[in-house]
Image 1 (cartoon, rainbow, N blue to C red):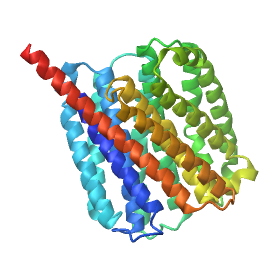
Image 2: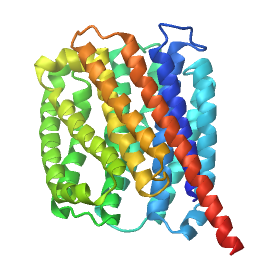
Image 3: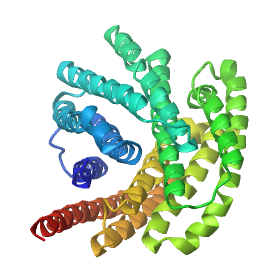
Length: 405
């Protein structure tokens, strides 16, 4: 599959960021659609178009041969997925969770099942990277079963119930702490393999084992704000222990990689990768710390802290890694568009996280500061889109020149 297809996920990331900017600035102007509808549109575009779309391209081009790609009709899958996400964006913006958005989301999941089936059939081997990725896809498959139960409770008028919210939190946990995270980590280890950056396979396997074992008990960490928290606290302690061990083995597995990475890679790639690594470590520590009673109000009832954690997981950990991999594979060129995009995104992300944390700790943070940070991220993503277009045009020009010669 041509690298130029990467422009679509990047463009959807820009749309997701644009909606996010609108949500943050909604106190100053009238939104064109309902706030709640736009929240759903924002998350679906970020999950299904940007994260899923980028991972799709990286997995297909990283693990499959051209003949497999053609036989499995992966390009058709990708085109249909991106078309459906555009329809999903429109449907959620206009009506939120309703008939058309549910139908379109169901069709998207059908394409997701097709991709998982084909990828398992075509991708061969037992590398640590592939084990992480296939495990992530299985978790993703499991997570898609929960919306049926969520929909059933919503149909019964139980949207305000703890059962409903528990299923929503469980679904989100399996999405970004299991499906997205495991695939991202698999792609990271694939990157280490491709660039001959040394890591400990033994410690990497231990990391995989403890992280895998933590996934289902860690659902409890998302539910400790519920009235039944005392009944699941043991699972929370177990999850915290497993996550702690997983983090230790992860850091031990890549200890030598980090040293080599500092000397071997260009500074912009290093910046993106180090934000990913720092965000993953911080996100894991925050996640396992939610079992501490003193942090209960911050972890479960403080909107600013919750948003900061979600952005740490989805932007800092997942998105920065995906951008780093796109740069490493030359989907994004080593061009000033990329450098400016990385600088703006980094500054906006760090600024946003710091301001959200201070607001969560009851400091008087003006909304203008958060809007400014959001605009910086938006502009950074826009420059990444420009970089993708530049790379696609350069690739087309090179192909034409070869044909002429």
